[in-house]
Amino acid sequence: RYNGRILSADYIDETTITDIDYKILKSQYNFTLIPKTVASARYGKLPKPFIDCVLSYYQGKTDLKDKPGDSEHDAEFYALMYTKMKNLLNAQYGMMAQDPIKITIKYVNEPDYMYEPDPDADRQKILDKYNKKAFLVYQWGVWVTCRCREHLQKGIDACGDGFIYCDTDSCKYVGTVNWEEVNRPYKKRAYLNKTYATDPNGKKHFMGLFELEDDPKAGYYAAEFKTMGAKKYAYRDPKGKLHITIAGVNKRIGAIELERAGGLDAMQEGFVFKWAGGLEARYNDHVNME
Image (cartoon, rainbow, N blue to C red; front, side, top):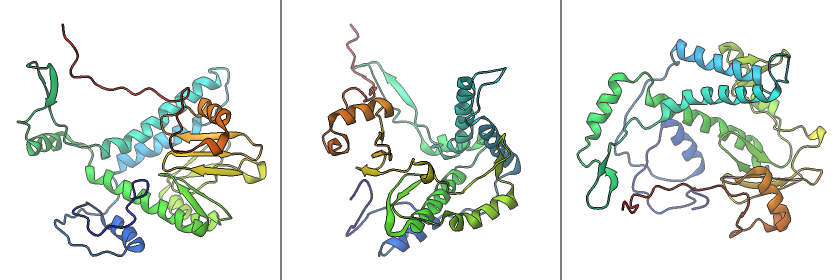
């Protein structure tokens, strides 16, 4: 394994994949698949009311991004509202992709005052109860994830040998990539489906397009880059300033702390962020009740 990805294996007992996953796996691995269970779901457009809701929040987010202060509110207020609008947009996917089966947890007051899963909980009954009132479909969430993975793979393929890192929605690479050419079919589709929003300056922002995070002409591209896996990377901009993105670590304070420790060279296995690390919360089911 490398960073959670299987590089090679003699045998994998069981996994679950979709048709889209299968196409990606076939392009990257040599394997023999023995299906144990096969289920199908129909392809088609999402319901119009749901699409309209998504586009409404997307337009709202676009209207608020980097909005300066005015006579009604300051820029800080609009930044907060932008975050809230973005959360509402993301929640529409989250509601589809959440596990529909929530196992009941019951309180046991003997002998150790603790919580534990209810052994009498019937998963099928819980699912049946959920489906009676469900207004979104779990399969939609599953295939949305797959479509995003498929789209990301196209970006990785476009980077070619220059590819060095990817996140769920971005690729980092060296060299040049003609993103306009990559985006052309997606932009056309977005026009036809009206899946775009117009900002206050009249610029259209299309869903599903790859966009450069920074403008190399303005001098913001990464001059140095180092990663130690998903959600763990640091880089220097051309002006020499260090930036980090590490799960659980404050970006601003963490960059200062890493710089003081030696910069990119100090980013090694075993390095501990003492000032920028976040707090970890844990439940304690064995508290002394006396």
